[in-house]
Length: 247
Image (cartoon, rainbow, N blue to C red):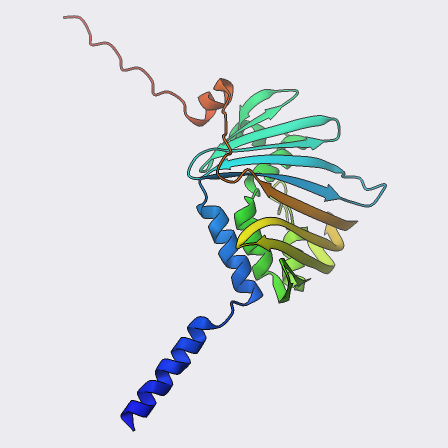
């Protein structure tokens, strides 16, 4: 009897180990595998309806594990770049050149928006985990895994920037969205998320309808070059020791 029970337990354990991973497991494993890579690049494209007030241009990013992350994005006719390592960041704008994040945060209007952009940045590997956790049921067809975002998952994507100027967080209504991931041979190559809803801030309603696509490339062959001006901000040299007083 004990032998039979033991064999049954072994069979059940073996069956669970050999079971196909769920679509959620596939995404999680692919995101973790990407995060473990020494480096990679990506390109983000955002599509919004014609006439939208905020029309972001493409974003290009490069990341080295445990090193520097370089992100360049276009806003209207300007190109904004920031390089970060850990919690430190240097921001380059056409008007002010390279500045520390603290200096940018002290500016009114666009400066605070830009600081929020930097602080809320998530590398693709991290963003994918957030999107997957914010989805409901995921299904897989070939290399494509897709599903709808929950209301909470959609709200998380619509709440970009969080609170501004220390005020109350914006109110979000009618939030909905969907996600799609492309995983080939266990490697994440692309993902897309669509969100829509109404964001109310300071009594003003703003309808949002955004389609974001991120393409991963150059895994293992990406290099991040940090300009000297940014390096001075990110890794300032220690002050020279004072010379001993003469007797």
